[in-house]
Length: 219
Image (cartoon, rainbow, N blue to C red; front, side, top):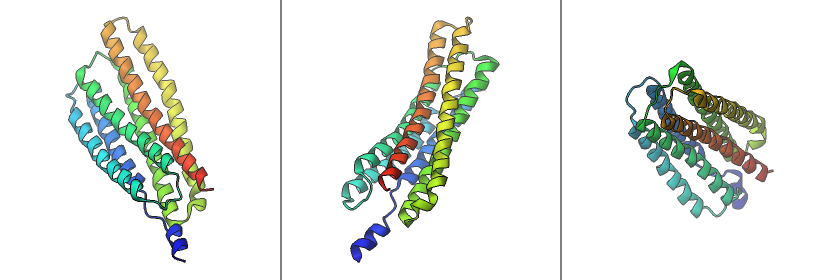
């Protein structure tokens, strides 16, 4: 009886707490990105502070996973999911540091494009947070089957946003290369910015894919 009780009410995983900290990091990146577009000073250390807060939660989760011998969930998949969540915050920090180094002349078209890319990243991270929060609550309460479709809807939204982001990235890079008025190093810098922001969105999709694998492991 005790064994069944333990497995029927697993303790919270902590992934939603970490994902919340990751979203706060991305939100701060979005704030700095908007400042960058407006030619205002960049406070990259604010993003680094949020990333560090997410790191502290990540370390706690790793310690708990090392001690938990009864989890129904594969530990390697949990660690992979945690790694991808962590990468979202890490890449956000890298993007902020890159922005602080240089701000080429963008023009209205690129200003709008970078704002749009930042907004897609924020939306994707929020959709993922909704997915992992719903999953963790449902898993802990033993109600995962009833919440599966809701989680899938959030994951589908992440996938759609990643696809839209990918299309936008290509458009922005093409626009950058058409800007003959931009010095070569400025073009290179802007392309690196686009690639870094795009890679951050990719990591959100990767985390969503890991979450899907976790759900499959419970069936």
